[in-house]
Image (tube, rainbow, N blue to C red; front, top):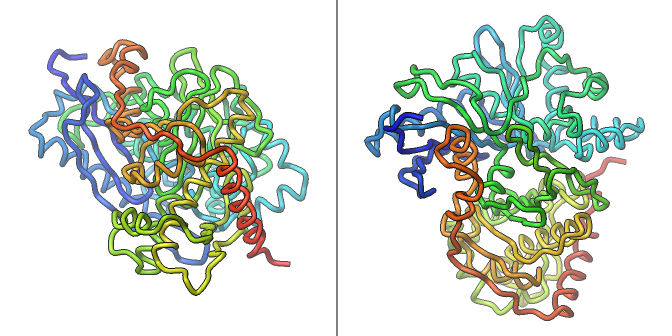
Length: 501
């Protein structure tokens, strides 16, 4: 690492925006640039992005954060990439152009494929090898769909002309001018194609989905010298030394480095992850077993539960119902009533994630009376985010046999004090918000920085983590149980709603 290197550049490619953040040795943010990009919903249950727009927006913010903060490429020790996971890109190796829109993680079009594979008796094999459940959420069936629906794609893939990747692979390819077709174990473990025990692509699963192995990226460590970002893009060659899927990166950024430590990211969805150490733990509650990160010889495994509609629930109240003008308004509106007045909102708009995994569930608003108003619905929306998260965490503790002593939180909605108090109340453990809530980007920076000696070790990272606010639970065990029972009764009304007989 050059003596002039003062920063690590984290590229945070998210579901609705691309960001670039500069971090210094103290783990402090020294500059940030962000740019949104288009969301496409061509059919019910379909969600797509333009891969070229993903790349151009990510490049634009990387350039902007350097320009606006008068930072040269020579001052960047390393680049770390973190990304929306499971979103699937298929591109031409010769031209670097995508063959079709990216199929986003939220997309449900492959539900019939997953159902057919389950009916044929393959679900247990996928879970055993990958730690995942057979669900449209993951990349494998999305890739199969692209190969099935783009004329000639499978034949071209067989000839080695095409490349598949999740967004980390796409960005690494672009930044390296096509020299690096790579992914790390945290992203690969989200594809339904990767054996998390042997840590390699699985030939049997590839055969079941009719996916040629020639499409797949090379697996590299989450922290290590991975590729070189070409001088064409930022003005000098900069080593790319960190890659992790967004939720694993956030777990690393929250310094949840010991077994039993857990975090929840309140983003578009909510993602709860618990460190289970060096061994994968098979869930008895349909949670996911996933790779957190790999550094040299050490692999860290996590248990994960995904809530599809977290912050997206608030966005729906804003954009779909017009109840609020901005997402920030929900806290005051929800706080204007003492509780939800018996109203439950189950935001199963795109199905339900853990522990239900029901792609046919649909959203419902239950328990309304003539006295129900917008404040009660707003309160029910925040309750729903907290209740969904609590349900996942309770299952997680049972699987891991690790009692949860605290929950570290981050993501956009973690700025909502009422939500975090509701979360502490329903969980029965303290909820802790750190001073830096940009933990996804921070985790990518930490992984990249460790690889080049910008930070010396994990103990140094743990010392940088600081609490901003701690929320203590206020409900009794009986009150918590009553809230959870009401929630689960509401969820039952939504299950299998959209299934076709």
